[in-house]
Image: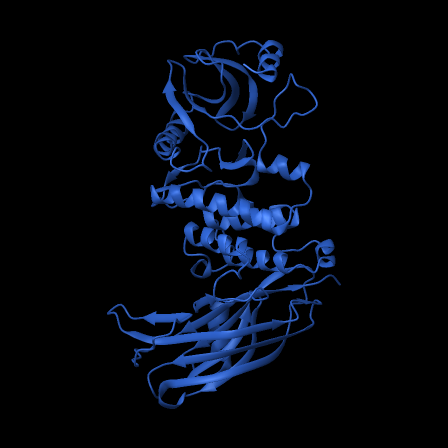
Length: 431
């Protein structure tokens, strides 16, 4: 037992009365939730310090639900270095309990005390972090979430308070809301849930990245603190692009899964743009909406949109390249220049409308007509206006609809029934 452990054990309160956990002495409470308490504990045989969560059997249904998730989680917890390790799951006549590895100690002034280091307390002690450091943390957590998902589990309550720092490494903790991934979840912390009120681990990781980058509370998303605009940082803008992609209001245009977010974060770490097909100064989505069956010849190149019928026939494709959004930071309501090259394929004779949109709706129309022989290769350069909202990071959409005119395109965007493909983002500065 090291000196800190000696002081913790000698100076802490005695084991809480009435609670006996086999092979452990409970020292004092280090966390408390609605249905259980987490204690600092010492293992009898090894003197090792552990975290033990104790659940009363009085709240039978909810406690058994948590315990079921934890048992499933325990099998996966040793498969990734950024997942908190659950060592034991058990019960006595009065309580259920599970034993976890312990987080680092946040108490640097009083060696007789202990406060677990979480990502939240780490951010409080470190008011600034470089975008690369923030994305590196998210890369590790996203890979850990991908491991959970591959085991059929979902966390449902990812937030900085539930990310433990163990020997300097971030680890997913607080597994009380773990559930099977195919169960629809409307539980969790609202600020980290999707706009339609669902728990989504990838969306939550995007919000956590926003907090790491801005040090703003999750509820402020997507507002950007004014002081960040004093930093002309390519890395910051690129990292905000990851946030926009992970937290896109339309679930179809977020990262396909946690592994995709981890891959994009690792690309960022290697100094590349994120995602792969976007330059660092971009964000947004490309949109396609079609109502007819369209056929055309094969195209070997990669497509941003590759719309396929249930029968397997591809009936519309869209590819955008060389996209630019300038300036990267624009005054609220100021002019934004959007330019890109594009290729659009459809069945000959079908009318389409190409435009731009953001979360605030339709911004501009680029093309309306019937492409000759169903193939259109062209370039666009549009001067549009940024939203009159200060200090936000927002995505930009390239929107294509199989409709007759601009009004129909606007209606499709407003109804949010257009398919999208994320491209890039821009930032509005302070007033």
